[in-house]
Image 1 (cartoon, rainbow, N blue to C red):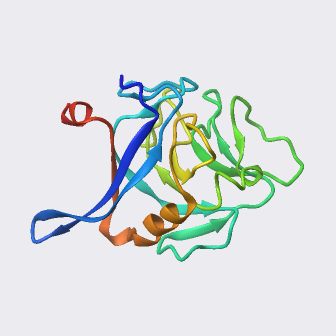
Image 2: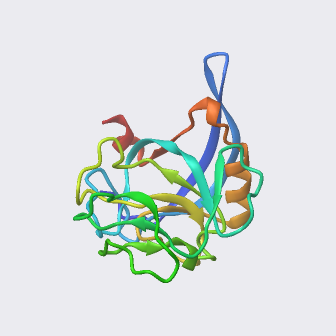
Length: 183
């Protein structure tokens, strides 16, 4: 496990079979407990590995110009982080003001305008979902400190990265030290 809560984020584009730097480096923040190749729900680590970016991006702010499907968050939009729930580690909408049928550390996404002006879902523990392995890993805006497991960037840099991503390219995010990514 790497204990750092800081990382460098760069974007890369494949050109003629070679990887070329496209933008960055940007200073990113990671989970309060660093990086882990064996993340568990609530441990405060950011998962190490290579993950796809979800097909839908979300945000409390209007679409910043992303090419992905975009859902503007509203009252009742949750990310289910309850390992006992049949909808664990997925976006869920319940009627505004109604208590969701799941508990745990589930997050009312519309209640997080500072962290979630716009975000991309990092598809960690999604195919298949393993209960208790971890949930709700996003690329989102910085809030002044480490995250609880996500990756965060300054808002302007986040906007630039999300606008740069193209769904047809099947973008991925590689998270971890060189040693963790070689495994």
